[in-house]
Structures are given as C-alpha cells and as structure tokens.
Picture 1 (cartoon, rainbow, N blue to C red):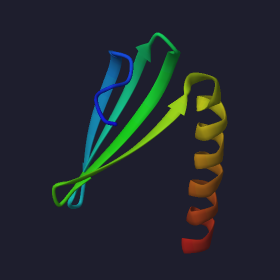
Picture 2: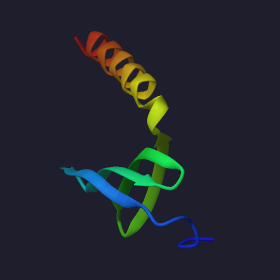
Picture 3: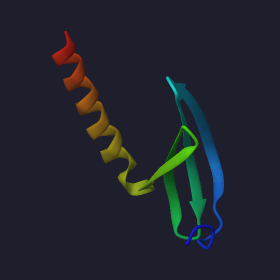
Picture 4: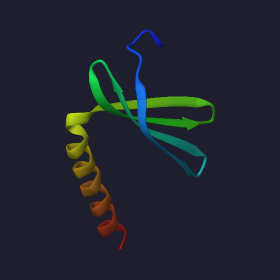
Length: 75
C-alpha cells in the first residue's frame, strides 16, 4: 500500500524534461539504506523504479552499454 513504507530522506535530486515526460531522479535513504528512485510522469501517470544503492554501479554500467550499442546502430 502506498505511503505505508519507511519514511525516506532525499539526499540528492535531478529533474529532466524530455519530450512529454518528466523524470525525477532521487538518491534517497531510509532505515533500509540508500537507494536510487527514478520516477516518470507522463500524461498524469507516474511510474517508479527503485534501485538499491549497492546495485547502482551495475545499473549505470548496463545503461551505458545499451546507450553505446544504440549509438553504433544509428551511425
């Protein structure tokens, strides 16, 4: 249920506006530890992905590989 989880503190935040989407990227911390929360808001709908802090490096590495592969395909 929304709102019943542990209270989290925002440590850092960035907001991106891309086409008709708004992305909120927050580094947060709660009693369970630090985590990255990525929320997409598009046409009044919100989708959220949470990545535990220990997995952020792997996430960034995988994202970089995908982006680089996409650049090679479009060239």
